[in-house]
Length: 340
Length: 134
Image (cartoon, rainbow over all chains, first blue to last red; front, side, top):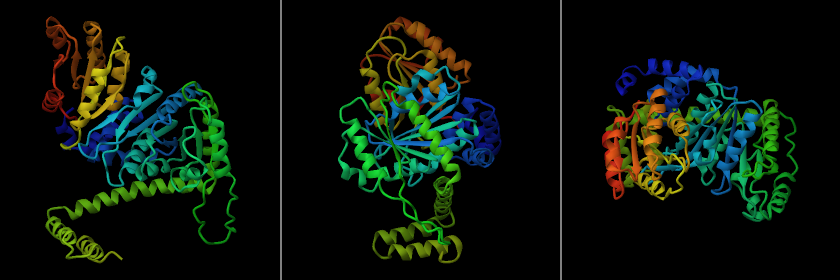
């Protein structure tokens, strides 16, 4: 199964792997996920074939600061989901080194007890420094897991940067994990991670301060009145979310059953309301924009335009050209008009 | 794609609790530009084979200090073969008597790295011998 076969006909390879993955072949799914990570032609063909059959799984983003207990909570949640008779796939994203490109993917350490269970599939993924592409890569991976028939797809990321927030925000339901005593009320009302949360989970509920942290978060996050959009014709403004706040102790399983109930409740609500539609639209945009960006970049660096593109970029670097004028010229290069 | 990082699973099968070496290697290979999946202590051969399959790794590195390598390693390579993963490069590190190396190689291990092996030499070996798939 060599490189040569895949290179010769990515469409045939994608069909073969895609059909096998949908039929339950985990190795085929794993190979497709690698193609997604590598942004290969096989991935494109597989997405073309499988995306229309996806859309059934519940996509859940789980994020939070390092050490809050994300992997432990995901492991506990896997157990709970399996007890409920549902299948679950996990994408666990860890950062790539910006210097060497290497990565240490350690999230499986806490999830290894499901090796014999075909209803559980865990995949670690390095962030690889894709410019704005991490969210699209993990969303594409989630779509393939969805098409492969998993009921629930969990996407776990470290919530320390904008791209990680985007990953979590591309899910149907976004869970933000906090540990007790991570900050005061003012931390909770700063713009950022907590704003994208549909559910806020205070983990390590057995530690002192967990109840107080949860109470503070509830007071700051939930108590604001919803804005009345008036029901007029104007498109609705983005509304602040009003997340439910839960307490779990992932290491003992305490509160995890309640978390699954809350996830199901959020999903059921999201099918009808505007938030669910907004999340699906945001995910669609993420996927499509990333593909367009890749195509633009590839076109501008192709043999026909590459030299002109490099010259324009060099002029910007040397301050001979401003970046807006450069964008105008690149648009002309690409489409024949100035792109507006 | 030729520039994608190689993906390596570092696993400790069996019951010994000494994972310092495995962690140092995992960290070192990260710094050499590999994507390293670390699964932790006390892995069964089934856990290792499942992780290798789901992660679609290019290399499985087994760290064994317990002396049980003649039992554990062939079970891992057999499971990999059964699951269609026979093209994954398998290496073993730890305390392995010279007399056992030939048997491990016969069981499908491509290299054995003993004490004193540098991380750079492991990295060079993996780059030269792992076949990036698809």
